[in-house]
Structures are given as structure tokens and as C-alpha cells.
Image (cartoon, rainbow, N blue to C red; front, side, top):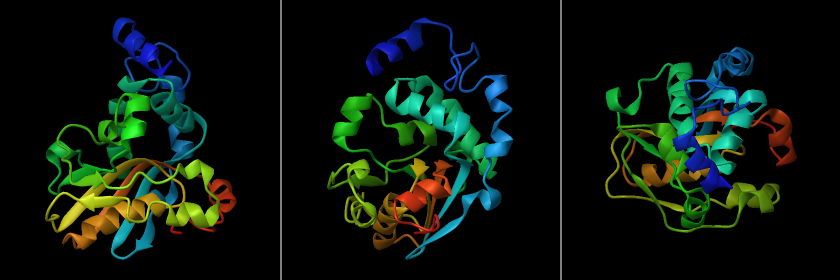
Length: 219
């Protein structure tokens, strides 16, 4: 279904990733009007520890959740670029092509890339992002793990591709427990980065974090 939808995206006029209404790409005007209510206070800032911090643009709910699921599961890959531009705009950060610091992304597993056909975090990051991380261990599917497993699962899953720059911004789609963001950031820290900021389009609401055994997004 994902591949078929990706082909249709190339042949048919673009539609809204959240509701399928006709639009120039990304979200239609009606869905975009819902974004201010989903914008996170303090940009979802969280200190993940070990010199790694995190920020997020929107709550993983409503039209944002629908758009993310459309890109990740329903083959709406063309919407990733516009959603990435929303990420940079909402956080007040320049996109990679104009950023004074290197921007990279959290690499997906090979199985995930094969299944989805694209690397969603890379598409969100946009032109100018550079590959600074690699997956060295796939690890179990996060959705199959309990709270303890979710926090420990991504540990050791990433490695830096050589010496890391002093300051790095890392892009991912959704932050739930913060474990993946921390593991990716820690790999860069161990390779020489002094400060790492992991930014995501969305952050899971508090009930989802509580269900994962967490009381705050910084866990």
C-alpha cells in the first residue's frame, strides 16, 4: 500500500497528508489552522542528560499525528518535505542549507527503510543535512517493549561516522520516551560533539509517556 500510494503521489495532484483534501502539499489550510493549538510550550524542551537536549514542534495528536502516520505508514512521502519546513519554522531554526551548524538525522534500520521506501527523518531534515550517524544495531521494535525495555532498547544502536562536529542538530520524527534521541545524541557526544540538540516534528502527549512508564518527556 505504501509503494502504491507513493506512485499515486507522483501521478495525481497533491493532497493534504492529514485529511486528503486538495492542497499544494503538506497540510491543507483547514488542517494548518489546527497547528497553533498543537504547538508545544517552550518548544517541548527536555534535558535528556549527558549533554543531549531535545526540542519538539508539536504534540503528537490531531492533524500532526495523522500527517506523520500518513508519511510513515501510508506512503505519503511527498509530504515529508513540507512537514520538515514546518518543524524548522515552528522552532525558529534555519533549515540545514542555511544553518550555521551541521544538521543530521536519526538513521532508520534497514528493515524500516525497506518497508517504508524512504528514510523519514532524513526527508524531514531536508536539503543540506549530512549523514553523521549510522545504525550499528537494529534492536527490537520499540512498540513491542515495556517501559524498561523502551528506555534501554536504543542504547548502543548508533555510532558516529568519524569525528563529530562540536555542535550538532539531529532530526527525528516523533519523541516518545526520549531514549532514541538520547542514544543518537550520546553517540555524537562520544565522538567529540560538545552539545547535541535533537529536534522532532512531534512529541508524544503525556498520557503516552505515562503509558510507557515515564512522567516527563525528559525521561
